[in-house]
Image 1 (cartoon, rainbow, N blue to C red):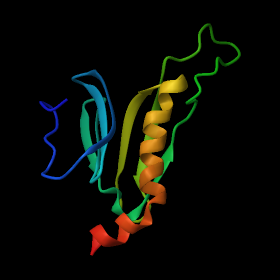
Image 2: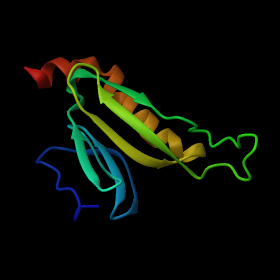
Image 3: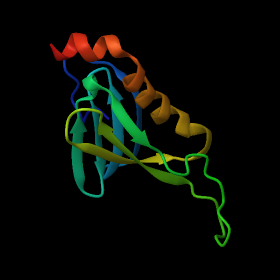
Length: 116
């Protein structure tokens, strides 16, 4: 992953996934970054995030043959414009991006300390 995203000094990964050079995401102690559908996007999560994970359980829908192996997440800043979209593995593995985003939605001491 380091060939696609260089971490700043002191920045640590919280969760990440790599599907291909065109589909990956990283949640760190300073940002949420992804490469999805040809677009590299990054979000400063210090003000909190709002995340939508769709069918993260990978439940088979009526009228479909198989349950989805992956789903698309949309993460946006609670106060600043911008959003990050990324593909993630549905089912049990979906807990990694969900809890990574939950960190940034709940840990308020980082929101204020880092923003000032």
